[in-house]
Length: 336
Image (tube, rainbow, N blue to C red; front, side, top):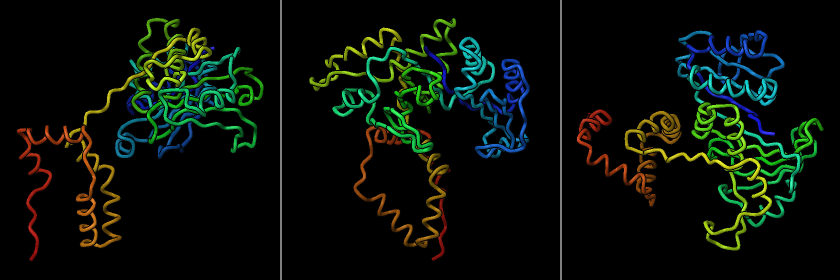
């Protein structure tokens, strides 16, 4: 069984009312409106029992000031399962082409009712000797610390800001669902740019059959299990049990090109994300000690990456360089 198991993304604030109306028509009931929210929003509309919530601000001014003029739609696995496959397909199309949604997370799942290997076997046979590719990190969870229940889960990758935008889980769904789903689940979680690419690809599918096949292919393409006897991965042989699974679900990879780095983007990033920390250090150290420390940090043996060196060369050749420098660092008159 293939399914969409999580979908969240931001939408323009001006689209909030139309998205709520559309969700109400899909679910068949009106949401419960609360004068509070999460993620610094001060309102939320929750479709009770459907696992779908829209977080938004009470005024356009607050939306612009706090959230850059965007609201947040969160569809949990429970809600998407209730909607059904065809409605989820229609929802993806609506969010992309009508609601201008920018996905922040999207999960695709494959429930295997005829598993060749259990998660524990994948851990012992494939993870300990790194017979897998496309991920740097692998882990094994045998107990759910939050609830004190037993678990059998293998994870690949890292979630959050330090991850690469893909995180794969393989676990016993019967333990997670209290026996409701007697299967082993492969579930890939896309975030960052990969989430948007995945949602856009699903929305572009011409029909439901293509959409369903792509859900499985995203799972299959997220990882590969190979025999690492040959150090050259391009010549490594794919393991038979994984070939059998790919024969059922296919494979498709999301490739995201590295962002282009330039001096202006670096300046904006420092102003947006680093200035607060620098101010804290200046207040803590004192002005003279802070500037001495900062200069020492810049002068130490840090080297530029190849992308940074390329950005520097491009900036040095930029005919607008002098004007940009004048705007960034105008002359400063200091008291003597």
